[in-house]
Image 1 (cartoon, rainbow, N blue to C red):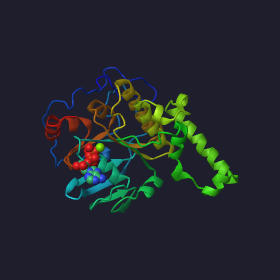
Image 2 (image 1 turned 90 degrees about the vertical axis):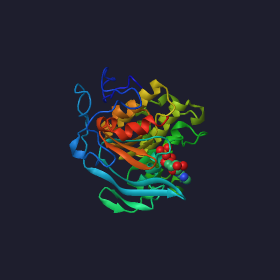
Image 3 (image 1 turned 30 degrees about the vertical axis):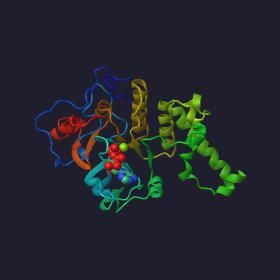
Image 4 (image 1 turned 60 degrees about the vertical axis):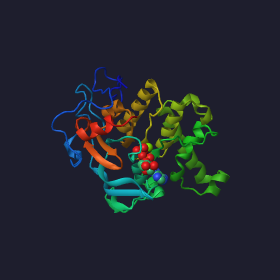
Amino acid sequence: MTQMARTRADGPPTAGAHTTTGPIASPAQGAGGPHTPHTPCAEVRPGEALDPRMPARAHTRGDVILDLQHISLSFGGVKALTDISFDVCEHEIRAIIGPNGAGKSSMLNVINGVYHPQQGRIVFRGEERRQMHPTAAARQGIARTFQNIALFKGMTVLDNIMTGRNTLFRSGIFAHALWWGPARAEEMRHRRKVEEVIDFLEIQAIRKTPVGRLPYGLQKRVELARALAAEPSMLLLDEPMAGMNVEEKQDMCRFILDVNQQFGTTIVLIEHDMGVVMDISDRVVVLDYGKKIGDGTPEEVKANPDVIRAYLGASH
Ligand SMILES: Nc1ncnc2c1ncn2[C@@H]1O[C@H](COP(=O)(O)OP(=O)(O)O)[C@@H](O)[C@H]1O
Ligand SMILES: [Mg+2]
């Protein structure tokens, strides 16, 4: 991803904007070590590290909405996460990077309550708890996409996206089956919202196509559409661009930025392409073997010797 530039809601990628080529840039002095505290929300405003020619973001970064404190998670003898702490601010794009097996997907599963850590605390929107629960997380506006596409392959794009609204249904299943009164009005509302998402992600032409017939890049976009249909305030994206060609990645990058800017959606993003991460994220947390080895702005993380070492020693 050499040509990827941070794209604004209404503009094309800016040539010559902040881009990164290799896995990580060369070392620099003054880098933070593994014990460097993360960069507080207030210290970096969105867009600050970016090309000054770019217009400001519609939503400025807000307060901390998710605070993960000393999270440890093991599976039998395997320590997936060890004493991980970091926070996520409202409206920011927060990247999680690290070599394979570092614990990135596990971290997302902790955030949306699929995995329950043995240790640590999670503070979400000011409410402290030992662990999240998947349905509560969904109700509180957390939606996600998966590393391996999780869609109903035989169902159409439209129907798959509709499943994203399941947690928002109010009327009972019988009322829906009878297509009766309030249920009918509610379903119309859901369908309208789904159509908005379809327009937003520019997938009108494939709305009636079974997902299994679509190329991989489009399936990933449908998965994003399904997550967006839930109208999330926080979106967890697990390698949304993995396996895509350059053009597909540019499209996906643009959509992620558009979601963030137009709706103010907070985004936690796992991504391997360092060019993408450096271009679109506000802050980056780096995991390696289940431990946090870096946390800060893209510039800080790029210059962190531990991060450089982890990346030079790992193949992607
Ligand atoms: N459900 C699980 N059962 C057992 N081990 C798991 C499970 N999920 C993840 N792990 C282990 O936790 C570690 C971190 O995995 P993962 O979070 O998928 O890493 P990443 O997403 O960074 O590649 C790996 O050693 C993986 O095998
Ligand atoms: Mg993973």
